[in-house]
Image (spheres, one colour):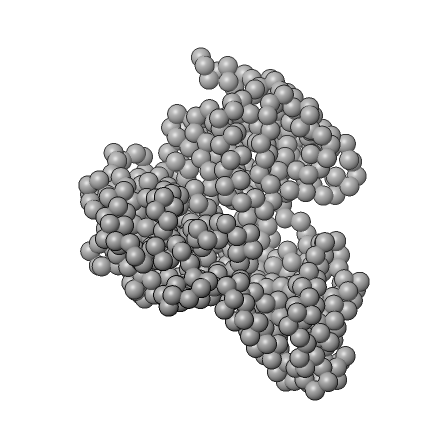
Length: 630
């Protein structure tokens, strides 16, 4: 308990003791701890007790860069009394100075960038042209000086990048060299759940899984993240890029009389056929053998021959990747992607995957993994693990989904804050229920009117959260921004982290201001807004998932496996998104805030949070702040 750097607040001592006991017994702990309990510092203090005694290392996995910064800041406080070395790690896209100046490289996958980096380092060492000036400077510098700086300051990723940038060094390469000495490593999820990257990380840390204590922050995100990690697709745009690549590198036969272009063109036709026959709005389920059966029929070949063709396509693509790498270009081959896709597609188990046609501007074949436990198995090869979130209930759903061992412990600790400091109102004359919106388009106008009235009358920093970007776009198309008196900042789909943080910081520093964001996005989960930085939330509906083919397949899979399809795939994730979003209002004991849910279905969640019907939201919100002053 001596590692905890603050005076204990309510529940924190219990939290540290529980984490220490679980890791000391080399077991796995599933923990829900309410907003404001200081999960980050408690997790570090509790796991470090074991790590330092048993000579283990801690891998702290986060979903966002802001969460990673918090890990380093708390580690600094611990380091003031107990010297502990920690390192924050991000991908080359964020930490390679060469990539920062090359738009093509920024789009590279971790594997592609790793291959290119290896080639450039080899050329640098051998003195050939096409090397990397940052690596040249890095291998010539005094590494002991770098170690001393990092041990003394425990820099965040951003701070270390600036330090290296001033000296012409490569922060990514230096971070890798520092990992072997670190007791704590903070890294994004991908560093553990991608098999290729996980093995690299373990090599850099010079350990095996058995010597690792894994902390999974915001663990409610893990099941869907794990499913997406094991899912894969082939899109129309990739097929077009394959055609261009064949023009540049040739079109070899992969079977007698059948070239790569022949197969790619037939896949285009099958993609079109799947759209016509199976697509319903966003997606549609296709027969499991639709693609391979179509190819075998068109070319009169066996499944064995098709597998051989896929292997040959991948091999030809690999030669293209090698040629690009040797020229210092991003080692990308869409032909390789095609061969790899076909191999994976024919090897998937129907028990765990559903095969889909995806619509939209870039239609695609997708094999969607419905079982996150497949990607999560390596967790339970580790010495111990801690799965924590403020919104992990129902814990039995989380445990079942990712395959937590039956003997692992689960704990729920409530928020230490007075619940009266957060008030939740709802309006009962609006809803985002799909069937209701089809019947009455005026519902959207009413929601917009509510939003404008609250923002303009209350003039507090206000976050407007949407269940989807689609609904946000509808509000923007209706020119709601021009009806609002405050400046509006926005979280947009596909935003780079620095772009998002510029919007968030602008919102925080422009009081009163408004920010548009989505429930389940980075603003609703990974960013703190203490004090007056956020005092009002407007939730534009309940974030129920759209009844797509993918969602129906997932529900059916969970119904068959656990007998709780709707509870596990609809109710649980919706509840978590709501609670995460509402949790932005109260981050410290001094915070106080009010939320307005524009959806009559808010009453369906009365077992998770208290909400009150408001017939005059503007008056009720204004009175809330008047009472606050008294």
